[in-house]
Length: 306
Image (cartoon, rainbow, N blue to C red; front, side, top):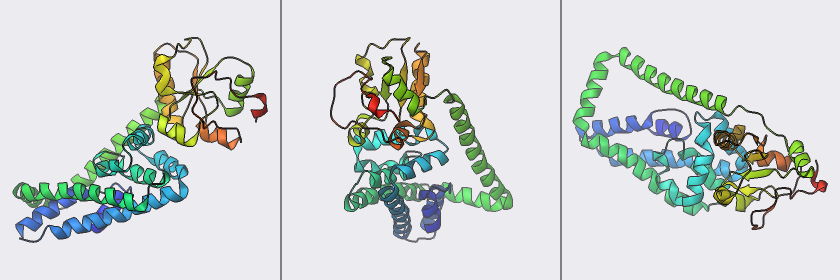
């Protein structure tokens, strides 16, 4: 049980939740304590989460990018989790185990954003107890039905193992296909950082949109002259104008999704910034970190040329 939960929360696709349900059902049938299962599951969860938390504190955004490059759901890995965690903060750890793809990323975000260890441990322990407690409660309540399923699996013998492996393989195959299809949809022409600076210097009046979210934007800074995408509702964008979109996610996923959406709405000259704000930093270009109103996106002077 400990190993299964540890690997599951560590990112390995091990079905620990059904195992906890089965263990609880067997415990009820044999008149054993459910508390041991709960304690073991919580300890394994906390150990895995503390490793992710420490990794986020030590490696920050680079670890998040690596995680999401390997994720079977790259479209939601950074963007969705950042929005949820940015809106709710550490209390989101209470329900993070129930949101697919959110748990490991949320614990890493907690470390990256500087959440205190005490606060992290409090909310993560509550979340682990609710998550494991839910599985144990299901197993205890429906122990007769679970027991019947286990007896049938035992009767099937090696065929049951084959069925379980086939189901897991099918799940991974579906997620892989969804990932491949998503990567195909965001395959489009990008603009490089030098090209963007040249665009600024030319006085083209290009609009630059930041899709990272307001909280992330205020905390880490933004490309001078760029506009928070959440403020788009009040803008009068030219359908024929140049629009550049950037983020800080693997494969420029969030930026590419926004670019594809804008193209469907009739904006033809939309491109994601290759490498996003991280590429901008690598060129040693300045970032703005003061509250500003919607500004002329040509706010990069010629001295910022890479």
